[in-house]
Image 1: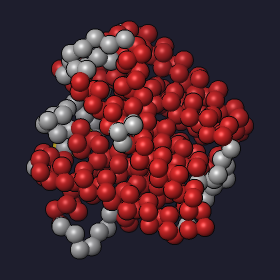
Image 2: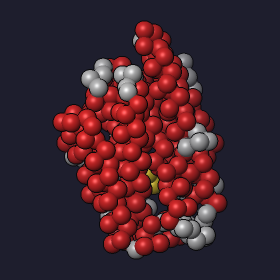
Image 3: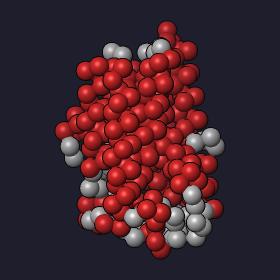
Length: 293
């Protein structure tokens, strides 16, 4: 894991452990929640939240629970994506998927539990920072929008509906912007919104988020073809098996990576408004482009 991510991973992981040390809940669901959340992962989305908050000198402890809630929502989406009715994957983050370990019913319930618990965590956090309540409401609305029918859910629906279909670049981008990009953008904006930002800052980070979100998905699709299964920690070649239309399907690997490079440049340029404070997000954009897993 690169230094730019590991800097925050330990902080996020420690808080996730604390939050998931649940009492008086079903032991199986507690085990399932901890198994999937603590299975590893880059912690990209919570890191984006924390970094965005730092752009305007925010309080990391105030945004940390939002960051952890975002990771719970992301993990719930992976659990449900892996189910037999969807992508039907047996491996995630190098380990057996939730439904393999706990059965389909508990995997579904685990995803439901993480989604609901994420909002419980954010609401309790907002109450602890009541003097900044309006900003917390805006941040939580941003997370809900990115994860919901206007964001990730619509992208997942499009991903399923378009299996075996031939798409234009515009149509393909729309699916990716919702499926992957929406939660990446929401991770950023939810951290920034705690600091009562000017609209120009919101606009700049929206451009950054949209571009790194698309880059992330393009690189993911390329790695599904040319990546190392051991590094990726999941089954490769699933896009072809599922007849999913991707950027490599449309343009091939080389041109797809060229598009990803262009999007990364656009993302980095959007950070200029923040001056040197945008350095960490610049480095993170380069990591997303060049990642191998």
